[in-house]
Length: 114
Image: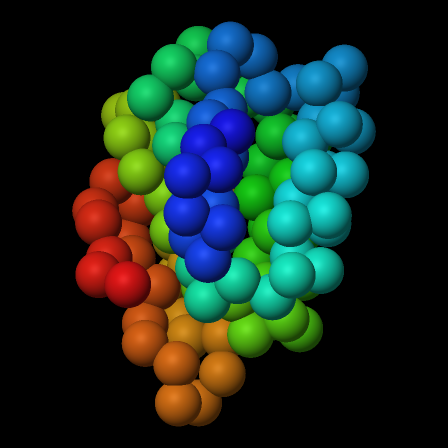
């Protein structure tokens, strides 16, 4: 995790995001969202594999971000994850603003300005 800018936390997700690894990531997301950052960034540059539990963590981050007024931004999204997000409709969720007056969320693989 990159803590150089507490207002814009970056969670680096690498290796496998699956049932065995999803719990600690979900707990970290919940902890970060208690500070109500404007944006929570996920960097998937080192992600090798993701199952449905991993997908549920992304949806959980989006849902909890909605409550906190926090935008979820995905960076360095591998092609396989882009495909999963598109096929499951999660991309559509991520393109929605968490509150009416907040800026839109970045599409997977793009960078949003803070």
